[in-house]
Image (cartoon, rainbow, N blue to C red; front, side, top):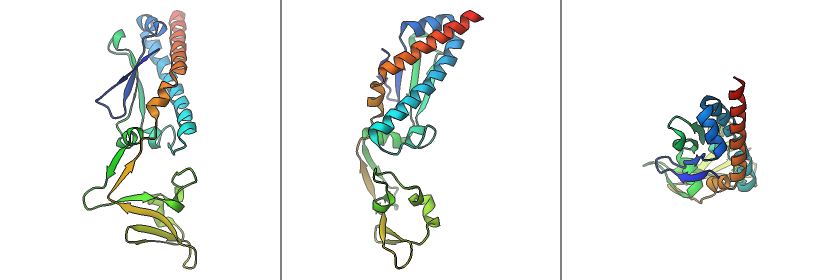
Length: 207
């Protein structure tokens, strides 16, 4: 099984060392073909990871290219010799790091964080599209603040809804479980790596 190695230089980053015999054999004989096949399998692995996270966390991950999950980058490193052959998953996003490990987010000096609450959220706690900050000016009705609370009402006689609160800081609990979910996919990852090696060897032999 590929070993999981934490990397300190990258926020939320880690490396899977590909030390399976099949991958190493393909790397020695057909490195170019293997690199192409590994990149293809990396896409499959990311899609599987995305599906598992959505099922287990229930939080809004965005999609494969945008949102929290979209900020994770994957690539194959084959340029430093067999002992460095690796499958790399990394994020440079502070948001990903905070949701993975937990932590406190503080507003910039003189500003406050705008936290969506109550009517802005779905039953699962995800932000409704109409109540995103960029969409608030287009909301039908009135959006107004009273102290550190932001309200919305569709008409002057409609019910008033609390949609946001303003805070200098907010604490987020660890909830993404990206690495834990990834570790649970070790068998799936191994199978995809073996498939990449087999395809690379077949392509190389046909040349």
